[in-house]
Length: 381
Image 1 (spheres, rainbow, N blue to C red):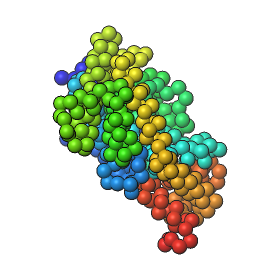
Image 2: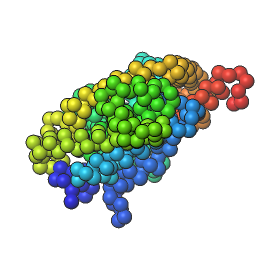
Image 3: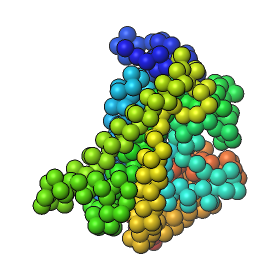
Image 4: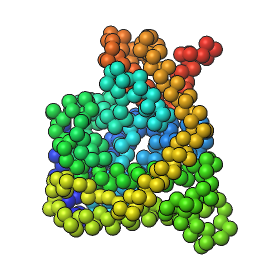
C-alpha cells in the first residue's frame, strides 16, 4: 500500500517523447533499467570517489557509491511506503555527470570553462540523460519520465537559477523548478549524504589518512566506535570499521525516518503535488543529526579531502584535465573521429562545450592515457 503522497508510475506525467508502455515493467522501472544500461553508468566503474582508480581495488568509485546510495534509498522508500523504483532511478542517475578524478576534475574543468559558461556536474548529468546518450532510434538521451528527470534536477531542492540546458529543456517539458522534488527524490538526496559520509570514513580509515583514535571526539562517530569496542573487545580493525559504519548508517536512517514521519504528520500532504508545494523538505534529519552530519563533513574535509596525499593527486588531476582541454581546443584534430567531425567546424563556446563533454565522460584511466598520448613524446598513440 503506497502512501497518498508517493509517486505512482500509472499517474506519471509521461515522457517528452511519447512511448508505448511495457506489459512487464512500470515506467519508473524502465527508467532505472535505461540508466543502468547507459554508457555513462558503465563508466562510473573507473571514476574516482576520492581515491584515483589505481590506488587500490578496495576503495569506492562512483559506481559503487551509486549502488550503495540506491540500496539505502530503496530501504528508506520502502519504510515510508514510497515508490522504491523511482527512488532507485534518481539515486543511480545522480552522479552520472561527474568528471574523472572526482571534485578535483570538476573544479579544473569548471575553471577552464568559465569563459564559456562554466561546468557543473549536476547539469552534465541532466545533459547525459536528455542529450548525450545516443543509442535510441527515436530520441537523444534516455527519454526518462518527468518524475525521474525532476528528481535528478531538484533532489537538493528548488532551482532558482537553472543552468542553460536545464532552462531550455523546461521550455518544452516544464519540471516546475520552483517547487521541491518528490519525496522519493528527497530520499535519494539524503541517502547520498548517508552513503558518502560513512563510506568516506571507512575508506579514510582503510587508507590510513586518520585512525579510530582520531574519531574519538567526533559526535556520534566516536561514540559508535567506542561502543563497538566495548561490546566486541579485541575486534580486528577491519571488522571494527565495518561494524561501526554499519551502525552509523542505521542510526542515520532511523533518525531520518523519525523526523520525516514527524514532518509528514504535521503537514499531512494529500498527494505528491501537495508534498512538492509544502514549502520545505519533508524528508530530513532531526536538528541533532544535522549537527552530527555537519561535524562529520568538517572532519572529512580537513583530515581526508585536504590530506597531503589526496592534495598531491588533486594537483595532478587538475593539470591533466586542464591540459587536455587546452590541447583539444587548439587541436581538435586530435579528438576521436566522432568528436572531431563535430568540433572542427565550430569555435568558441560551441567547441568548448563539445570538448568539455568529451573530457567529462572520461574515466580516470582513460584521461591519464589520453594525456600521455598528447603530451608524452614516447607514448604510443
